[in-house]
Image 1 (cartoon, helix red, strand yellow):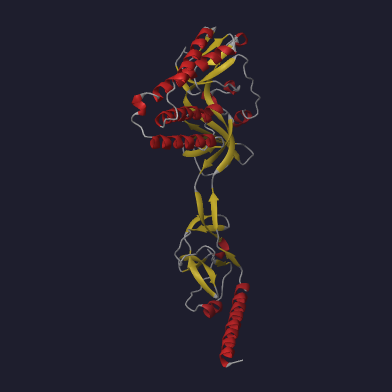
Image 2 (cartoon, one colour; image 1 turned 60 degrees about the vertical axis):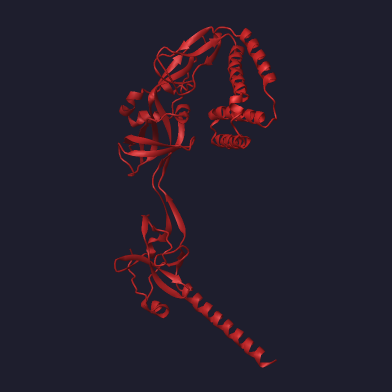
Length: 413
């Protein structure tokens, strides 16, 4: 074995020994201290609870429901005036089909005429139409994911109209004359089958129309909710509603509604505070006002009544729902409270950096019972993600051996 080989092997062996010794020293230092790795942690202070919607509602009744089929003239949430026709009664369901089919055919006929009009096709480019078609496809997919089925029909009609124009512009279709002729023939045939309604059902006031009736409409007077005792309010969750057989819909007096729920006692809000709430049946966030907080005797819970003036399908079509009052959310580096130390007035923690023990500052953004959250930062003078936090005090000897310029402070914060 030549001298060069011997020297190389000697150097390699020396490096190996140094690594082994260093790792053993580091292991002994680490092993002698109780540490915890700094990790990200999120605290969500939202309050979840189940509640019920209360609205100022009046049931619309029709006594001859057995003598015909009802066809509603308004969508849920539509504004109607007093004594307005909200529905019509026909002799059989075919009459409703004929009318709906007639309206649909007239709409399709109008779109086909517009699509092949020179005033439409002469001033658009195929590429522009293609982009619009793709956009409508995306919109329809999003509506399906959101379960917003009521909006899909209009979006689909717009898509069909653009596709018809595209077929004319690209020459895929010469014109729609055969289709138009066929639609006109079906329209004329339907007109011969349509009969006058047997009767009309009128509104018993003005307000916002809703087709469904669940029997809770008469369980409580909307104006008396604030006067009710906690026992009376709790019983609202347990009643078995009786839906009138002759109910055909209802009217909401105005946009105002209340949400009644039972929550654990909290100091996060007071009466008249404005809060944000989200329901399981919708991703939308509503602004509500705290009308009242009624503690339930002998428990750690209270009945809370929230009010809002924003009306939509979620409010109209649900009686009970799971809700979440939205408060602050904090994300930061989690620190056990026992690990906090001070250097003068500076709050921080001691961390292991290899063989060294050093003091790092913390920027507390949230305080829990047995931990705090420090702001996540890239400033290495502050506690960083994945640092090894020392959970107990360290002696001056330990620090001086590893880092002589580190100042000791062992009092807890």
